[in-house]
Structures are given as C-alpha cells and as structure tokens.
Length: 364
Image (cartoon, rainbow, N blue to C red; front, side, top):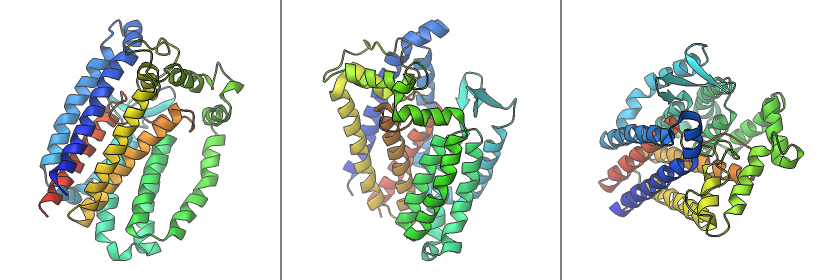
C-alpha cells in the first residue's frame, strides 16, 4: 500500500466534512434564527465539535494503536457505567422521551457513540487473541456476543434501536470475517427477529414508523409527515437542485433537516448531482478503507479497520436509505455531514485510527 491510500482517505473525509459544515448552516440557519435568535447557532456548535474531533483524531493518529488493547477492559467497564448512568433521572438528559445524552453546559455527549468505538476495539482485540478459537461456539462466539448483548440491552433501554441494529450488524460482520460459523450467525439473526418484532410492535412510535414506511400516506400529517417531506425535498431538487441555501423544505416542513435528514436537503439544494457526489465520496472512502484493511500490519489492526469502516458504511447506508424512503426511520446521522455532536467526533476519531493503521501498514 502506498501513501496514496492514506492521502485519498484523508482528502475524502475532509471533503465530506466541508460539505457537512456548509449544509448544516444552510439547513439549520432559519430554524436556529427562529428558535434561538441566532442563525449561526448550530454552525458554531458544530465548529466546536469539529475542533474537538480534529484534536482527538490527531491524537488517535499519533499514538500506537496497539496500545488500545491494554485499555480495552477498563474502557468496557466505563462504557457499561456510562450506559447505566445515562438512564438515571437527573444525570442523563431526556429529549422527546429518549434518555441518551449527558449535558455539559452547551455540549451534549451521547455515550452509545463511545460504546460503538469501544465494542469495535474489543471485538478486534478478542479476534486477534482468540484466532484459533473463532470457529468454536463457546470460546470464540459466546463471549463477544454476551458483551454485545449487555451493551445492546442497555442501549435499548434509552431507547435507541437504530444504534443497536448498526452495532449488532457490524459485530456480526466482523465475527463472520474472523471465521465464525455461518450457522452461529444465522441462529443469532433468526433468534433476534422475533425479539425485533416485539420491540417494534410493543412500542407505538416504532409501530407507526413501520406503518409509515410501508405507506406514509396513511397518516400524511402525522407519522408519515417526515418521510413524505423528505421525498418531496429529494424530488423537488431535480438534477441540478434549487440552489444552495434555497431549500423550501427546511422552512419548518422537514423535521431534523440538519441532523437525520440532511441528505434530503442536499438533494433539494444540490440536486441529483449533489446526492450522487456525496454517495460517490462514501464509495471512495469505503474503497480506500478496504485497502487499509487489506494491508493492515497485524490481525488486530486488520479487524479494527474492518469494524471502523463497516460502522461508518452502515450508518451512511441507513441514513441515505431512510432519507430516500427505502428504510424505516432509524435516527442515525449521516457520517461527517450531519449535525451530530458526539457521533461526529467519534467519526473523526475513527478516521484518525484508520490513518494510524494505514501508516503502520506502510512500514510493516
């Protein structure tokens, strides 16, 4: 692997971040002016997260990534504690019925994003240590699935089903690539389907999301409103878009325009060409990430890179799929582009780790 891979991944991430910064301001300025009397409210907060993310990315890029293996057990304990504490009234912040955040003055921290990274590091370390047992059910499959199960249960209590689905999918992909038997993975998937059905059908808003996904026009002013407005935004942009800053759907029609549905605003303002451009950038990112995975100097680096690229890819795929009406609403931000705070910061940390692994691969 040449340094071109590292450079291409870095440039691709920078372009996505620049697009995100511009689109966050465009999508949020009117809403921010109305609610906070400051059109740059979300932009300024995003720039703070960008600064924090850059600092942490450079830190994760400069250290020896293998040192993460020494800290994974304490990090898992901290992860469990954070997931428990965020559920405690008065400590965790509740927004729209969900208790997923810690609030520190003007900055919010979502512990599930930290847990995503910790779980990927843990799985990569486990696979590297237990290589000869990866096909064993009790020694190579049950331990990581047990840890994943505890994390997933705590995240579901927030509740946050979208994060659990993304994390669980990434974990199963990592274990499959490590050599876990397909029968083990299928048993988890088939066993989890009834539970997933119960989780969806037992909670009214999740049930309505599924019904709205199947036919948003059943309740166009209620549960189907967001999906319809998202598709209107994408459709009204045409090929070239209505122009940067000229979106109509962001004028209090499309909820979460600068977060979960920013891709729809990109489609409206920059058109089909804009959306294809963003998708192409993610494809380039995945391709360069795949080269880093292939050329990682050790098994831990290989599976760490695999988990990081998989998680970013899944979040992008789910977000774009939701915006286009191809998937039910999940509440996952678009990596590097959405206004997302802690999610955005940990995406930058992931890039730093990928560049770290890429650099190590050059000298191996």
